[in-house]
Image 1 (tube, rainbow over the protein chains, first blue to last red):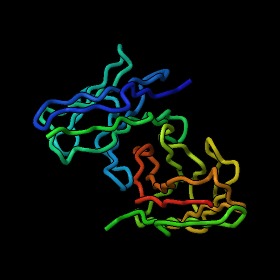
Image 2 (cartoon, rainbow over the protein chains, first blue to last red; image 1 turned 90 degrees about the vertical axis):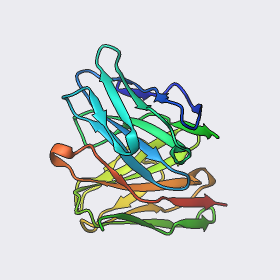
Image 3 (cartoon, each protein chain N blue to C red; image 1 turned 60 degrees about the horizontal axis):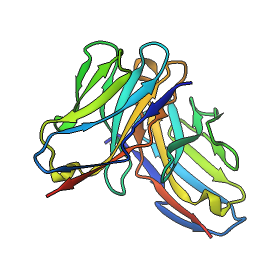
Image 4 (cartoon, rainbow over the protein chains, first blue to last red; image 1 turned 135 degrees about the horizontal axis):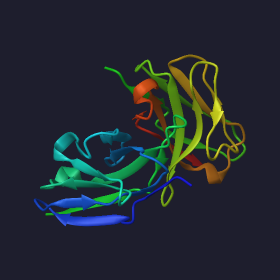
Length: 113
Length: 114
């Protein structure tokens, strides 16, 4: 069955440090993949998307993600986090067969001053 | 500015009462979705729509109805609200076509059923 796993419910990093949020997917074939961000008390916003092509995709605010078919992963990275990155990050996969998204459970990013 | 708006933003309802959550989008998107978000569950799809007049069941449709009277509007209806339906509800729209998977979210409605 198609699924998305975000193994870390919570990640704490110091401001200015680098960041990696993990996402593993289960899907037969090459999926479309997404990272969304949810700031406190707001809706979700699209951070970046992967459609088959270059495995490294750039998003807003310095975020990037790398697709790995061999590892079934789509990890999110940022070179230097800012306090304003404090949010919950969701990974999602599109199964192609319909217009739905399969969501991970989210990773809460906490920034230490 | 294209946007997805939801009303009300906060709602307190009584058990057994009827609740209607409204969503409006100015993105001119064909697809619209209703999700609920609960701690530990992430986002769960309740109903979705491919266009005016269409509604489809998502993963957790029991206890909910949906209505899509126009391209812009998509409502979620709780005919007999229960405390288990206390949650934050998000509406989203999506363009369909080659970018069919992208979704654009409203700010959410916090529903409390007492």
